[in-house]
Length: 113
Length: 112
Image (tube, rainbow over all chains, first blue to last red; front, side, top):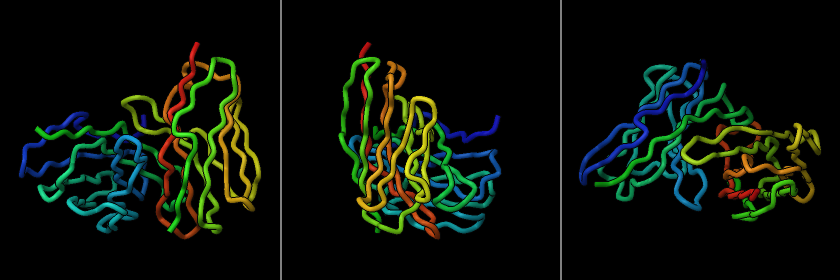
């Protein structure tokens, strides 16, 4: 079955530590997105990529980094510069352009130890 | 940039009743309006979308209406069932843009 796989489902970070969240899709989609979800805040865009080897900052990119070396993969690193990383992180993909439906993974919940 | 406001933030209905969630948007050039349903511990799933060249779209018990003049669109769920309980998000975007702007969500609770 085609879809988006996020791993791990739960992740714990120690102070000063970088952690990387995985996102893989087998939908052959060109565009991929990372969102952060906090209670009552909706979905806020962190980074997005419309094509391999290219990505753009979203509304809340500070303290995060991404790479897009392969079409099917778009990992997100939460760096130690992100002072409030506890949240639910969602990855999505689409064939491209904001007028196309986005398909979401089931998220990674990151917590601070 | 685009701003999407969604109301209400929580909505409780009895099974069999109808539920209506409303969103307003700020950018008059926006032309794509999807709705997503998110169940607990899962990612959002697209349930219906509408483009600005139509005023209404239906899919079984779900319908979406769009008023371009007033810049608002609404999700209507008829004959609600307990499995409709979830958080619903509206969103908006426009041609040539790369990203969606989401509302803050509505938690719908359908009581048996």
